[in-house]
Every structure is written in C-alpha cells, then in structure tokens.
Image (tube, rainbow, N blue to C red; front, side):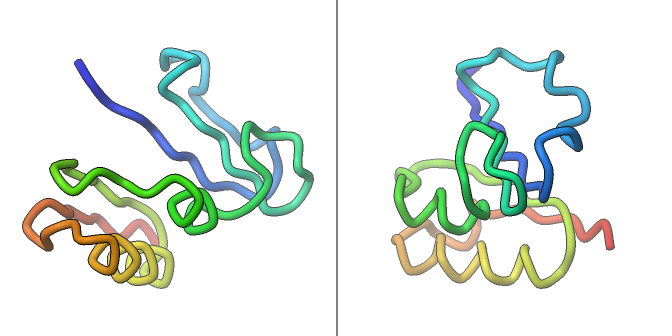
Length: 89
C-alpha cells in the first residue's frame, strides 16, 4: 500500500501510535519543540513538499487546519474530489 501520514502536533511526545506505521511513511510535524521529523506545521510541510495531483488525501483534525490544508492542496492542483475530511474538534 502506498501512503504517507503527516501527523501535526505541538510536541513530539504527543505522537501517539507512531510505532504502528512504517517509519518511512509517517512524518511527525511539530510546531512547538522541533523534536519531530519536520519542524513546523503540516501546512509548512505541504508547501515545502507539494502533493502529487493524483493523490487522495484524508484530512482529520480541527476545522481550521482542514480548511487551510484543503485550500493549499487546491492551489497545488489537487482536484477537490481527491480530498476527504473529518472534523474531530
């Protein structure tokens, strides 16, 4: 299966279930302590590493993050029908 998990959190210690994913397919984006795989928010990661337009994305988290990522993916040319979302909080 071809996938990548971008896990946006403030502190690296909040990276729950990280051990359940292939190390090469799980990226912890930390905005607080810089101890993750990428220092910055998920949006910063996507800006630096654009998503291929044939990708299907599943976004889950708070409404503001989902909205921001959706807009960013659309700007990168990803069709809206390839973006699926679930608001958690």
